[in-house]
Image 1 (spheres, rainbow, N blue to C red):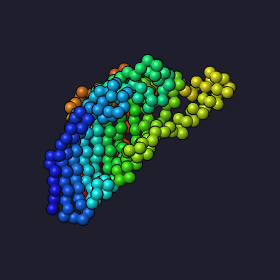
Image 2: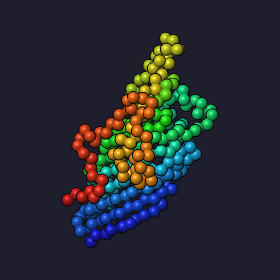
Image 3: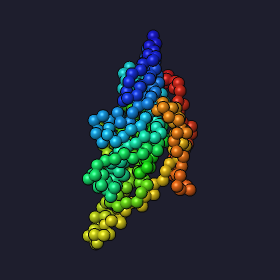
Image 4: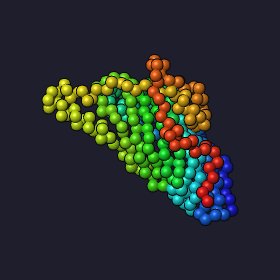
Length: 287
């Protein structure tokens, strides 16, 4: 027979998880379809054990998850899933310490460590994954704050729970002691590993080498010129408008491009390089 759980709703991180789950046991393995909306999830409630996040972060996150797969266990269903994972938020605040840790920006980090953390304004956040046979590929990632513009790429393996994500932070303010460069997130969903790219490590090694010549020269590879610009948040959020709606915001609530610069930072949408994204509604299960 066919089991339909509609609605299957409960509270989650200060918001609500609203879902519909269909399990068709007339075939073997079972065909499953999942539709999940995360509504008005509070950023500060997502990581309750992290005091820095809980005390300095606010904001409402929305998500739309549409998956279909086959299997007689949740793991098997996830390993064969097709669909989309979309996340969006407009506005809010986040730990400035956390942002500068991502940027590895020591010159800004020192006063925070000695003077306490403080929040920085979130302009927008957007992420869109296309899921094919259990592999979720990040086609769009933007997290833009007053201090930094972070883009990203990579994959999530829903079957093995493996992470392979690279974040590219771009500080918006000049500073020193910066090891700016890509940050790689590996490991598993439960045990993520954070590491520096070889490019970033190379800059640190270069600074050490120059220090043997002249201590002042060691600062050259570590100077951050602050090239990051404001993202066109409305353009980014338009790609995940359904998720933004679930957050309780509208795409028009977000700012556009760099209000102070003539050329805002471009939104790199990898999905445009490989055709249109997977549909957000009713993904058919594999036969």
